[in-house]
Length: 399
Ligand code: PMP
Image 1 (cartoon, helix red, strand yellow):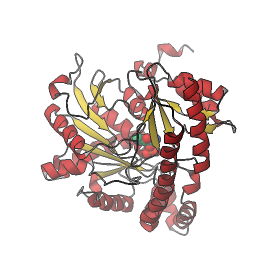
Image 2: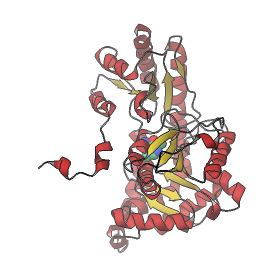
Image 3: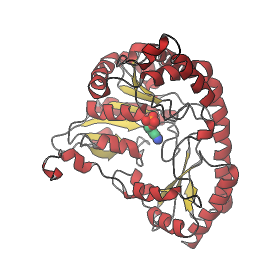
Image 4: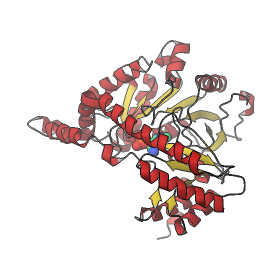
């Protein structure tokens, strides 16, 4: 079979990055890995999910838990989420919420909803790799969003035949930088979106993982404060239980104006009918029983690891290396002197120091900024962090 003759042109844009290939080599036990950006499985609320699932599968309720369900998502979970959104300064109800299979599916659907080939998506530079991948399938061009507000709206031009459609942001503890947008930067993003008449995709995947500093209102809350209500807003808020309860259950949500949610419900119906019923029921039960207590526990654990990593970086990094100081999330982002390349360093590290990280280039839509790398502290204990940063410091000094 000559597949090239039948493949859609968009499939040619889907490429496994070199880095993903390299990351497959990191599972070796002798490697201290700070590469994977995943929650620590030791912190999952496994007992709570075990009893929630057992209850959902007991007696007559089992029929509903194993049955098809509505595309909008499990109503009690949508009600609970609406209550959380209200507490974040986003007055809304369950009809403003669609349950998705992780926020990754939300990004895919929003790409599908908004982008025609040749349209422009504005993004932070660097941006979450999975967002680049999700949007890329819809054949956009990417342009750099300048959060300082110094780039005037008239400077964000489209390619011939396309238009600027959306601005994608991770306002809290972004992947890969760990950085948070200030209130003024969020307001500037809204000013830009209003001036260009485009959608804002707010990716709140890490929002509950704040370790210190004052919370900044979500972009959607700031927009509601300007416009009076969610139905007049252009912001599409993507939430996730992956970093709070469990990524494996694949439960996320989109919160937005009802006309957008209605279209997305049709999209979900066509794509996968609904997210797994049992996972939604169990997530609802666990969230109601212990979301606040559980997230307080994991914040304490991750905060200690973040502190250990920042302390170890100060101790071991040679002059000329800069890094972010995240107030939450899972990542610290390093900028190395010009001329050093993260991918070369990783190859060298695997041969010598055996410490792993993600080279930063993959997070830039234009493949620039090779002198950067991402470290994750989420799955490492404090001793491993100290040893890992000592090795990384040696590697960078020798480079
Ligand atoms: N957004 C960001 C910024 C992420 O880092 C991730 C996962 N690493 C996701 C979205 C997707 O997460 P999920 O689909 O598990 O909700």
